[in-house]
Structures are given as C-alpha cells and as structure tokens.
Amino acid sequence: MRTLLILVLLFVPFIAQGSFDRNLFYGISNDLEVTKLQEFLTTEGVYDGPVTGNFFSLTLQGVKNFQAREGISPVAGYFGPLTRTRANEILNVDLTASEQQAILETGAVPVVPEREGNINDVFVSVNTQIGLVLRQIELLQAQIEEIKALQNQVAQQTQVIEQIQQNTTPPPTPEPVVEQAPTPIEPIPVVEPVPEPEPIGTPIVFSNIKSLIVSDWFDISWNVDNPSSISLQRIHYSTNKSLYTYATVYLGASSRMGSIRISRLKVDTTYYFRILAIDKDGNEWFSDINSFRTD
Image 1 (tube, rainbow, N blue to C red):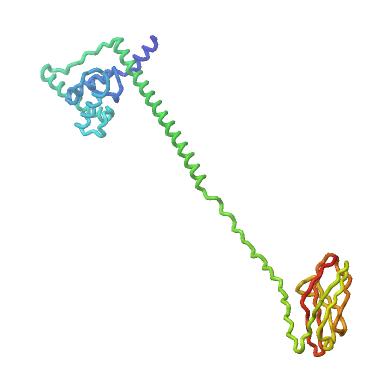
Image 2 (cartoon, rainbow, N blue to C red):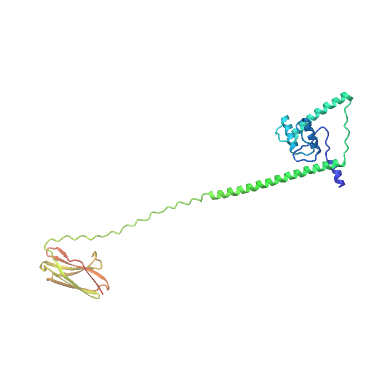
C-alpha cells in the first residue's frame, strides 16, 4: 500500500493555479479540476449551480453556455482542447491584470504560497483518476458490445441476402428438345370393288339355291329360268363377304337345274358364295351372295 501511495505521489499531476490542463466531461465526480471549472463558469456568469466537483447536468449546461457565448462549435458540453484554450486565455488575462495591479500597489508580484498537500487530497486525486479509468473502461466495454451487436446484425442481414439470392436465382434453362416429326404413315389404300357393268340382253335369274354342308365340304344346287342361253357357269366362294378375292369353280352349260360339290374347306368357318352365268353374248349374270358355315 505504501508503494502504491509513493507511485501515486510521483505520477499524479498537480494542477497549476490559473490554467486547465486536461479535458473534462460528463460523469466525472469528486474532482478538483471540475471544482475549479465550476468556479470559473460561475465567475463568467454562465453557471449558477453549486460547486461540488461533480460534472453532471448543471455543469454540462454551463459549459454549453460558455461555448455558445464564445462561438465554439460544436456546442456539446465537452470541456476539450478548444474550450480549455479559450478558458485559459481568459484566466491569463485576468491573472495578468491582477499582477499588474499588485505591482502598482505593492511594487512586487505576489507570490502564491505553496499549497500543503494532505493525504485526503491525495486519496481524492487517486480516486478521481481511478474513476476516470473505470469510466473509460465502461465506455470501451459499451463500444465493444455495440460493435458485437452490429456484427451480429451484419451477419444476419448477410444470411438473409444469401437466402433471398438462392430463392430468386432462376433455374438453369434446359436445352431445347428438338422433336423430330413423326414419319407419316401412308394409309393403306382401300380397294373398292369395281362395279360390274349391267349386262345387256335377257337376264338369267337364279332361284331355289340350296346348300348341304358336311364337315369340310358342301353341295350347292340351284335353278335357272333360261338355260338355253347359258354358255358357261361358275361358283365364286370366299371367307370374305365382299368376295374381293375368291376361288372359282368352272361349270359347263347346264339344264334348268345345276349343282356342284366343293371340298377341302376349313372347319368351323363361314363361307360366302355366288353363282355366275355367262350367256352366249358374253354377258355375266350373278346370283345374290349366300353363306354357309362348316362344322
């Protein structure tokens, strides 16, 4: 403890009378320099509060009043280099005038007796210095917390921006698919049956057409009304009702009744047939299309 007091006595600056040697600001308490500032502001007529050594709202307003009067900007209440310089100028003027009056009256410059310090003054000064250091530490800690808060805000905003960019980035445009035109399918031509020309001459009429089916063969019989004019007869038969394709059985000229047996047919199949007669003039005469089904 004694070593600490010795160091304090060696390094704590003593305040010279008649000047302000350090900056003063809001929050300082129990400070001799603040006491001297309050006395100075009271003398200058810009402060009417108590002289306490505490730099609080009344002293802050007094410094602002002094700055506004002296044209010091900004008017913020901080007793810094600009304000201290102007205050010291005023003090020096007042001190010079006082010394000149003393010389006129006494013939010598008055000597200010050396102030005897005591242990209470030392402790007050040390406490003031410690308070200033703690205050600076508090301010630094507050600034560090503000910086951390700003860093967190920046990190959150950066994350939000990245998410927005990810959500708004358009997906890659796919390569256009060139569809090949399908190969046109040529329609299968439909073979229309060629209409048979109307024969010229006396028509041959078929009647009483009968068929007998036995397994894979059948017998057909029929009558014609004009057998003397017939030179040739045929039977057309097919599984196709339109008889586009057909098998032919040739028959010679016959009497009024004709018949024929057709064999080697498919079992369980429907067949269609018609009778064709060709007269001596070459005209073709057809019966209606008939059908039968093998067993």
